[in-house]
Amino acid sequence: MAEEKKKGLGRGLSALLGDHAASAIAAVSSAAAAGPEGAAAIKGLRSMPVGQLQPGKFQPRRSFDEDRIADLVESVREKGILQPLLVRPLPGQPGRFEIIAGERRWRAAQGAKLHEVPVIVRDLSDREALEVALVENLQRQDLSPLEEADGYRRLMDEFSHTQEELAKAVGKSRSHVANMIRLLALPEPVKTMLEKGELTAGHARALLTAADPQRLARDVVTRALNVRQTEKLVNDEGKAKPSLGGRPANAAGKDADIAALERDLAVSLGCRVTIRSLGKGGELTISYGSLEQLDDVLARLSRAPVRQDDELDAV
Image (tube, rainbow, N blue to C red; front, side, top):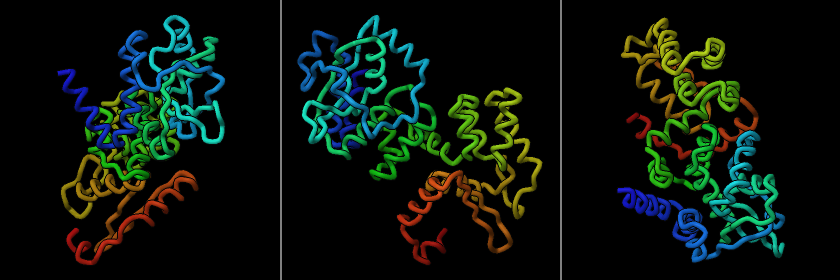
């Protein structure tokens, strides 16, 4: 069963990235599993001075937790680098290499005073390097929720991958990918609480349907509520408001179809969307937390295909 899962994951990577880029990730995993004796047969594997390496420009991590790096340093001192770094030659700079995957291991090696680290060298284009960096990191378990969500969003926006393709490639469910991307629709202050660890991804998902997630998030942190208590808080707030137009409402007191449309738009635009019905018409509100996020929304809207009248009538 484990072997079948491994083969399926390989097919998912090849379908997503192409054989050349997928083989680069597979080589890193194979070298780690083979150990020092078997790893010698891996194409492109060699030791390299840490001074010849530099961080990659496609690093998907926003920050490096110093405490976790310190723990990794101790592990490296005791056991060495168990999984090689994936690097590519830097054009026009002989002897210099860019890290595609493994910057934390490189940093830990320097902290442990290692002079060389194991690397696998692959010639990857900028597109392949970015895709590999994102996918390799998403397969690991130590990204923050927002780093993971942003990785999925970038792979969808910049490379036109679907949620189903991403799920197969990184060994997750499609619903997991969808739920993580939804976190990007949260207001910036709530995202900050999530990044700091004051809220978990479970808390954040519960707050997505709240009318005022920022206010409720502060309440959750102050009262140290767990996820189930947060869900109840959001539900109770929604029940206190009348449903729209007498139609079936969800737990947040909003028409179920409208709420679903808000969620879909939030995922597509990467920020919070509110729809308010006003008789035959209504209001569509897009909330952004920074000018950079506004630019991103405008760019996405400009890329969106325009629906024809008959398509609009069918909605």
